[in-house]
Length: 534
Image (cartoon, rainbow, N blue to C red; front, side, top):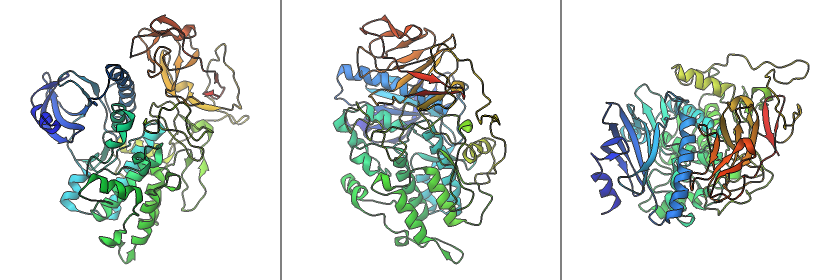
């Protein structure tokens, strides 16, 4: 039986607690269903992901551990404890699991809300007007910047994954799902995941198995803008391999091939051609690096005299209020999280270029999926999010509110905290900031990129006695498995073979099969509320 026939035959069956009611989309790798539970009339969007049939039993155990950890982090990023969305333009993740029937599948569950994809909209209306596109682009950029702030890439942004709700609001779905799919494949099969859908826009670095970063999502976002402007995909062909070759080698066709882009008597086709080409550069180092930058530059082209729209803040800076102005660095006290940098062009210890890990390059900010280090969006983006949550019409953002207070004597944040024994307090600290004390409640943990790289992240634990401790999360029994903090047991637990470590006692082994404690990571808790490493 072929895979698509299997998906069709699953309608009416149970996956976890969900009964599949309608098959919405499918390909050889995954399918999306509308589902419901037998105890509620609420509808859900359930995505079923097929595992590779070539996985060994041990590799499958490792994968399931990674899946549980990363799906949990996605769920926490996208929805609060009441399962409400944390960002108005990202679809929450409500539930996830390992399907028992059919075996060999993982599933992810989101709310089913009245909405239609950009693909459907384009099929009905064709190209959109430039100001509507500006509103949609601002919302997409806001959502992606939020995800990038928390160290998560989309990796597979297409018009199939962007939806318009009945209230006109944009919602992006399937954040981080491609990362989970790559984990379910051996390294030599991961590139085959890209370009499966005719609407896919894989960046060249993805097709070449090279490191990915925020500009990878910008490549896909630029392709979406192109399609919204002219109604056509950037590249198209009958064969997947032909489309891949175009993404690798062909320049972006001019919009004039389809239609001139004008407002009144002003023809913006050439300017928009240059902008999209900059967002879809083959070399990621030469590409626009941030979604907010693409959105801001688009606005300056199509509506330069509209001063009601405040520029979206680009990670690490406050966006300039005038075109061409120099970005202003964000004050350290305004940061809720921080950027993560490395001096090395590639992370030591990564398995292969196809591993799906995000490596760190000298010349630009790169992110880890796990959500430890993060770049902060403050100012305009925070206000965009706040106003959209309150149903303010997209594109009508105004900057109001105040910044955190600072001490006039020292310029440091007025935030105070208890300094615990064993930690260095350095008001003028150096090193990489991995968290703020307020970001990690008592009896909880947060992952962060290790300064010297590694296959797995570090894990920062806020103990019940108020101390912060950190360790390499790599289980000392199996280097493929990262541990996760269990707040009920107060232990770091390996999901692969059940090893347990006590973070309050130097991560000593509580239960095997791990032979030795986890490797400690030296951290400093600083007077400004930041926690640094390295």
